[in-house]
Length: 248
Image (tube, rainbow, N blue to C red):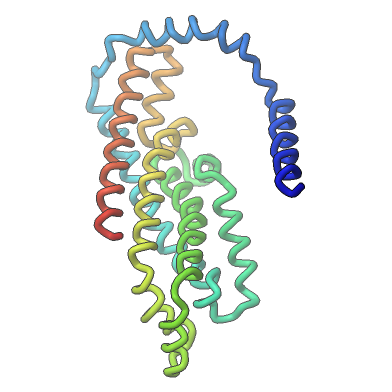
């Protein structure tokens, strides 16, 4: 009965989603030839002015990397308060976890849009958007890693007279460093992928070049930029995976 109830619930949710989205396969089928024509017209790829594309790609990597670094500094105190073994005052536990959920709940794209209005166009706004969203993600991942850690070393440190924060810094953080570092690398890799579209709201990166090409209907240029984006994300994925293997 419980399994049947879960299946019925799943079917009901999917039916509700279909009702809201109203997918129309006939429209998709009718639009495929037009899409194929655009793609065919995009060859050969236009890499003219490659220096501009390379500069925008470097902006994407830079704002994602710096945003992840800033996010790590923001996430550390929040994660310590959001993990039961390290939280020095338990009434703070649930409010801080709610804050982390709120930061994760607002996409970096939306944060970047807000910061464009605050600090103007450019990669700085994108970096701030990435940092705030990623602080929520890192805080969540780190706090869960600390809560899942073996409690015996922490209890030993506490019984020796160390405070909760001191025990966490001496025992908990070093013990879980491979997991937290791996999570940070994963977030960095995700941020490089996500940052490719921040230029659509004027927050710098290669998305800015992509938006300009789309606005001009220059599909040769669009496909060239998409090829660079794919190469960039593949490189970030390989680097992150290699570093995570070394950590774990």
